[in-house]
Each structure stands twice: as structure tokens, then as C-alpha cells.
Amino acid sequence: MSSHVLLTHQTRYRYDRPVFLGPQTIRLRPSRSARTPVRAYALRVDPAECQQSWQQDEFGNQVAEVVFAERVTHFDITVRLEADLSPRNAFDFTLAPEARYWAPPVALDAVSSAGSAPLQRQQQAAQQQQAGAAMFAPRSGLYSPDEQAALSAYRATPAAGPYLHAFLADWVKKASCDTLDMLVALNRALAGHIGYQVRLEPGIWSPEETLARETGSCAIVLG
Image (tube, rainbow, N blue to C red):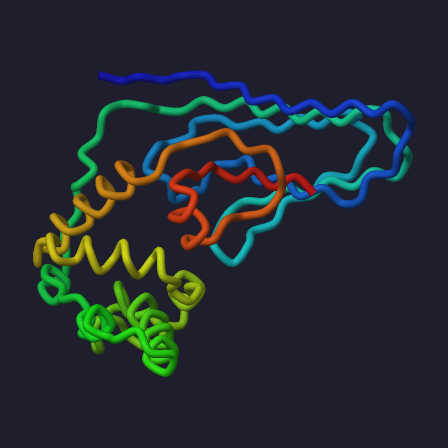
């Protein structure tokens, strides 16, 4: 059964005096590759006396940039879209035979058995970084050189700190060798470990900070 919904998102800023705004970057448009089809989309910025342009970032996201030539006393962003929320099978895809099973990196076991002397702690930190980077790195031969280059931005991950390594080392012991079962279990483990909060201050938390705080939020970048 079809289920279309109309969504409106509005952000409003008010200033106690006329101010100059620098270029404003607005990331409020669903990706074209999103599994939820967007039937219609409209972005309105007020004051309307501004220059608005669209561009695509390295991740394929549609990003709007707004520039005001004059001072403003307010800044409003309104997004209206129609989305098709008809139920879909999230597993309606096939995996390549070589991707159906996975194995955790040996580095995780090595770090778990490391000692606590200063030199050993330094070695442990280096091993944690290697383990975190290798955790979900595709096996050799799974992707062609061109595909690896296209995926490089998605595989550039920060070094794994103690919280991320501790989470992975504990979770891997219970993980299935089946890739799909592993990914489902990983998402459930993260959902059970990390709470959601509304956060208005700028900045994006690293995985290490998110796990340390045991809470996280979605990021909206405005300027």
C-alpha cells in the first residue's frame, strides 16, 4: 500500500541588530540514492534577496550555498518535501559470494592480550588504531582499483581509541561470521549502547567521543 507523506522542516534565526552573514551551507536535502523516494522537494530561504546555488559534495550529497549581499535581521530556512514511505524490504539485494562471510582482524586478539607497561601501552595504542582501521576493510580482490578509489572517502576513518576498541573487542566475540547477520547485530548493539539527544552546538563528534558519552545526535550544518 502506498504511503506518501508531506514533511515541513523550518529553522529560524532572529538578530537584535542587522548583521552580515557569511556563506551559509545548508545540508537539508535527502540523497538521490536514499531508499526512501522523494517525490517533490522545495527549499525556501528568507530574506529572499540572496544568491542560492546547489552543488554536489564528494559523498554525492546535494548541498545548497546561500550568500547575502546585505545585512539581515533574520534568517529562515524552510524545506518541504513529499516522501514515499511505502514499506520496503531492506534486504532486497544480493551479496557477492566473496562478501557473504567476514573475519575480524587478528589485531583485536593481539591487543586484548597486551600488558600494561609503558612500552606495551604504546604498542597497544598503535595496535588499537590498526584494528579499528582494519575492522571492516574489504578483503583484497573484493573491489577493482577504480572501485577502491571511489570508496576511499568512505574508508578514511579516524584512529580507534580505547572506547572504540573496547566496544569492538567485546562485540566481535559474539558476532556472526555471516556478513548480513553481523551488520544487523552491530546496528542493534550500537542502538542499545548509544542514546539519542538533541544537540544545537556546532561540531561533529568522533566515534570515540560518541562511545565515551554514550549518546549522539544527527548533525545539521548551517554555515
